[in-house]
Image 1 (cartoon, helix red, strand yellow):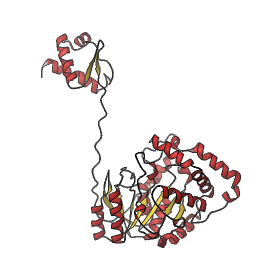
Image 2 (cartoon, helix red, strand yellow):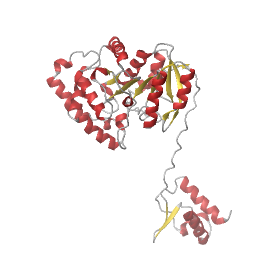
Image 3 (cartoon, helix red, strand yellow):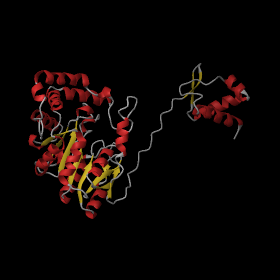
Image 4 (cartoon, one colour):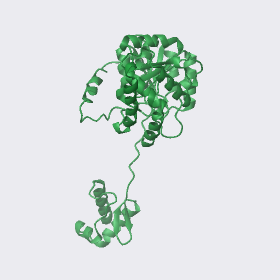
Length: 376
């Protein structure tokens, strides 16, 4: 290595260590010459080499500056390779300890898919809440037993229609968030000891539900861009008596994958072929920010007795504190899920349902979505 190359390497090391920052000006030629105890011509040669490599740039009558370097793009994770064998889920009670830490005011939930409070439409939603307190206080003080508030069911059916999924009001069951919907769906179609296919990795809350119900999880390889592997799922269905498959086809948690429409259509056909119940978690479906809203698995079914149970909530879009979710069930499971909901906690909070029904009916939800999609 020549002397000017050694000097170029030292200057490069200074940039890497943060001594010279991107966009910042390098010391002049004479100062560098004194700093490294070499001739001016050696410094000039070193600067030319660094300029050729793109590390620094010359500006007319100003000297050399460190180039702004783009952040290196992290490599996407590869398709997961879990053990293709049903296993009991254990140790999920530890998650509760982390959840309890979240109550501390200085705790930032970096490991949870929770929107910042500034993304929530609390000022706009406050008007709907105030209207309910003024005009519907008597109804708000009472239970609305399963399946839920008809006005909110109607608004959900209307919204799902405009996003490409046609359902009927008598298929909609209101729940306390999406996690209860997932739990009710599993209880309606399976029992303790049954095998449930899941994405790998998957949402930790689902693992808690599976553990609490005494079911076994069968992890299916999942691609970070296209979602669950249909080939691996079909192989698993041929080998194991899988009762249901729980997945997030639109912006999966934690990978963020978006299943292509062709895969969604194929998956629904695969479920029909094997009489497999698909439990679709579409909690992030409304938050897409490029192009049209992605279609749900349910939109590829026909009739009201398909093999898809659709689950969602307003926790990621309006407020997680409202605890209002819903599920759309095939006819043969609707009464069972409604009964399980009733014996579990009687009803979903009435005041939250009334306020959400008003918020959706008067366009507040759509206006908020346009704003939050732009933010994302």
